[in-house]
Length: 108
Image 1 (cartoon, rainbow, N blue to C red):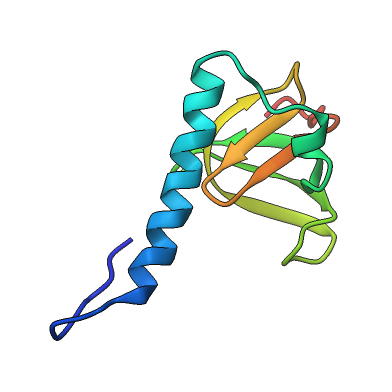
Image 2 (tube, rainbow, N blue to C red):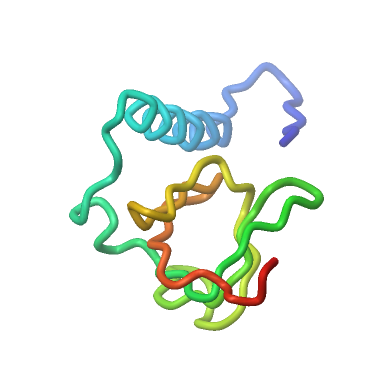
């Protein structure tokens, strides 16, 4: 992501970008220490069914979403996939956590 800043500032939009990346870093740090997201943290996360990982152009998930705050229920491509644990039932993308339900059975 690139943001052109012109003039002496301030640039409040950069504060929102920094907050987003700070939250991602905090989530990844917790997972790296073995503290996976629990049911409370995933309670409001969108659910993803028939999901699979697609590696092009960057890794992301494709599947049927239910309960996304911005998208209608149906097939989606997530933002970049940062980490996921199918056995614990979660994925962390650049945008948010997802609750992973049944994966795709088509072998992809």
